[in-house]
Length: 144
Image (cartoon, rainbow, N blue to C red; front, side):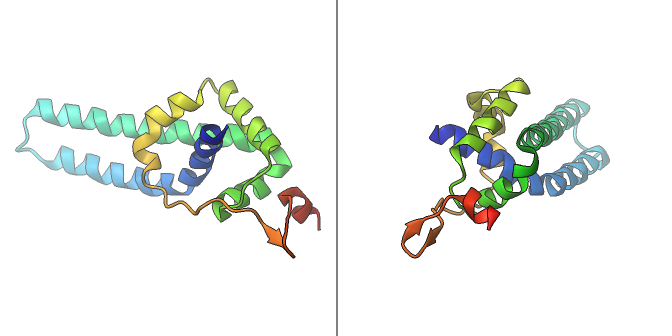
């Protein structure tokens, strides 16, 4: 379950970076096209690689959407917990995992295909929310 949680967190955390990464890819594609010195074969190979990276970003965005739709009203709080480094509710992770599987992915496939992007994420260590020495369930915090 730890790997599944980390993978789901990665999908949520990478989403804000997608637009910037797409802009970098576009600039790189333009520079490749503008470089007339490089043989055509190398240009085509590099453009294919850049296009594959764009497809990866689109697929991550779709996974994010599947998780968002599956969690519904709980998504905002879930996302906040992921970005805040707070351990979320295991039921929400199960729902997110089901959504990922519904999209046709497995945790292993996500980790393999998007590992190079997940390395860009600056993570906060997971921690429990504490109040007066007691661990607090994040759902209970949200209802207050």
